[in-house]
Length: 305
Image (tube, rainbow, N blue to C red; front, top):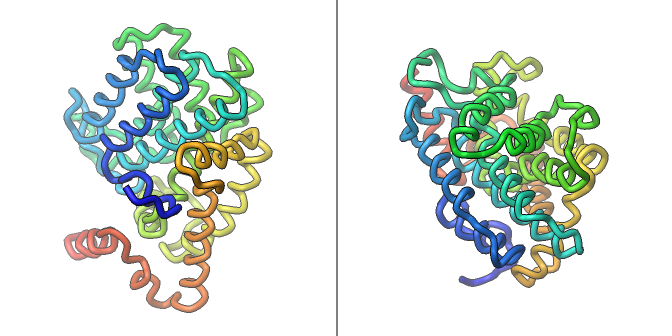
């Protein structure tokens, strides 16, 4: 594969299996003797869950918080773990495994059960973290994880909630706290660095609408407020999430020979392009959101509703 130094050229992010192959490779770099049996099982179960192949659950029907968002978060988490190790902080196998498993399960709260036929999973936006925890409370013990493991993952997933007061969480160790910070960081960076992040934002707006999330009057209003959200996120990464994002640069240097933080660069490009659209093409902004097939999907949806 040609390495151009662009974030999106490294791994085919639309392919969950390719993403997991890279995660597995990074894990092998962290610990050559790592037993990936449990992680692999959870990955396969989560893929099946989002595809509607897991018993008792409907296929994912949210277009922003979908399987790709989960695998984007998973890869960002693995990269952070690798970067931390390169800086000399060795993580135990349990920390690596449970941190990645928590990443896989962190948005399962958007999935509907078979008998939940009203609307979409977007209606759970405001409570999706607690619903993700509730899913883990059923799933993990049945997959032979201990209650201590469940508590570990529960704490990590709570780090992804923007309303969570992280200082109130009960981490079992300093390493556990860092893993929680990494998951909160991976969740934010994974979605905002996506090359189709801007195209997916209108779908996020419609998720917010269904959940009656206040503060957004239209798709355009959400787009206008996104640069300020990035400023909020930058502060949160440093002040509440331990500034663990700084370890990504070392990961990219060692893994790909690129001495830069490609997540930060990708996000900066997205925000710069968004500001350009808002400054010069506000009236027809959708014309400038043409990566992937998102706008065609949105327009088709609008014609049929």
